[in-house]
Length: 380
Length: 136
Ligand SMILES: [Zn+2]
Image 1 (cartoon, each protein chain N blue to C red):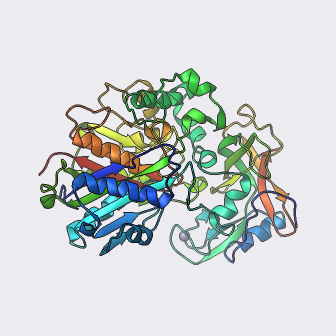
Image 2 (image 1 turned 180 degrees about the vertical axis):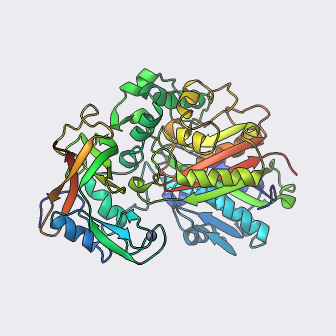
């Protein structure tokens, strides 16, 4: 893709966040979509492309009254929305559609008309993982952590600092679910979920969603919002089974998606003003920093523990508080994208002054998939 | 019927050889006749070179503890805390399993410790490959 040919012109989260007992899952999509349309002064008749993951584009197009000429139902977990942005940008550039709406809604906490996730007993996961007692992401996603810690000599105290620093960011955000400061002792004394991880190292469970509206950059000038340009994109997938990821200390999908986006953007790491790395669990920022090349192998834990991603640092990371403290509906990627867009618009609660480039990196499944979007707020 | 509460794997045409093996007390892998890759999970072709020229082989049953979590929440068929582990077989592939005959603690579960396969019979058709500390 060429740089900055497509821009985000509309962006919003759901009106509420956390516990939303008054909306079913599809209405969370609609609530976010209507907010994003209002943000840029559009209605459903102006949209000709639809992408979503927890519901199908059929359901969303019908529910919102959209007659699309392009749809994308890529559903590879929480980074699906990064991949939707990538696909939508390519489709707009190719002339397949003009204005794409990407929606996300998930009744992760209240579970109102949430689509259940089932694992067939004859699938590879059903035969070769489920019989050994996993129950959802908290029991599976941290399985590589002990190998990572052993290989690089990472301490439990260093790992705990991921949660501590992100809570500092959350403290600056009125919409964050958890805002009170925590210490490494708080993290290491919190309830054990799946050793080595405790509850404060696991993501929240929230109701909520978000929506983005993308169009070509030459049309973006006509909208009331400050355009946020797509500078670089990447995607990849690896394995549906965490037990079969090739390297427990590095994500193959991260290592393809991230560098692809950097090459496309034509930027160096020092050019990055703001960074989001999907943090379903506390080890993900470590893998993300290393696999995207922000630090060397084995350096991420001491980098974060040394406050190099904390408020006031040169590499502000997960500035909304992340999945650990802000919100996490099950598929968090849309919330990371929303924070990148807010930072590029200059309206984030914990705004990084003068930020011009934001990298937003997502994971799907248990290291199963990845998508990376690099945003810029400067036109060509 | 078994009263075993674990999720029961459903063999498919491509995986039946594996479950026939564990039922007979043998851990079976597959090996590519063209590039010699030994791989898991089962499929009737080589994931390294796409060849269909593959054969099943008996693994040694020797493995080492690669990584794990100790799960503290209730799951049907399990008594927490229990380890959900990934072992690395002597032949190379890794697989998810449980570690038995061993305290389910970080002190007892040491990465790279030597393990050997043992079998947990769920019913007349399914035996799961589990691992225990190697004897000698
Ligand atoms: Zn081969």
